Amino acid sequence: MNNLPYIIGALVILAVMEGIAWFVLRTPSVPEFEAVPATEEKVSQVQPEKQEQSEPLQVSLEEKKPEATSDSGSFPSPTTEVVDGVTERTIHIGVRQWEWNPNVIRAKAGERVRLIIHNADVRHTLVIPDLGIDVDIPPDGAVADFMVTKKGSFDFLCGTYCGVGHAEMQGTLVVE
Ligand code: CUA
Image 1 (cartoon, rainbow, N blue to C red):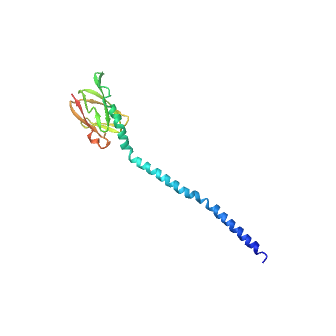
Image 2: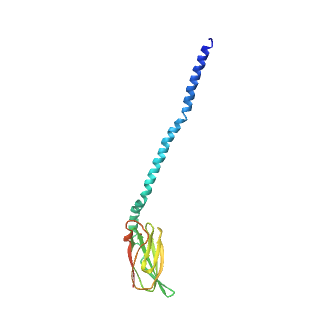
Image 3: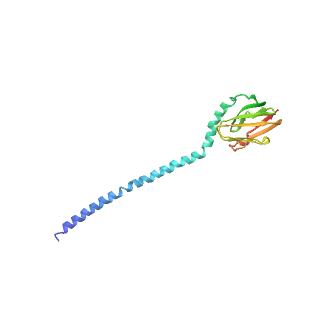
């Protein structure tokens, strides 16, 4: 029975070590608790991005409208040049949501028309159904070359959906 104090002492030491071990082993779980809020932060960061994805179209429209307005009327006037007996008419035209500027353009039968299209915003398409013309207009603009052989008024429109006013993008090519 002389060993009893030593046994009790050993048990106390074991208990203390157990306590230390418990404390040491539970500390790694602390970062795990921190990791949970961290992922929540990531989720909360993703959500604003998703919201932004649904908005940029409207934002860009409002931002670019004033720019397009300031561009209106600043294009060079039409010019003509005779090349190999054919009159080439160069016409600058602006396009933006949701109009052509000007929306009436004029040429003469027998001319070659060179339309220099300045785009102020999103993708549009110039379509002149009666003349079989369909020209893609990316945001940086396009050039359309075509002969006009018959007199008349030919409506043109936008062939690529570009927003709520898409259907209102109408104009007329008058061939005299
Ligand atoms: Cu421009 Cu549709």
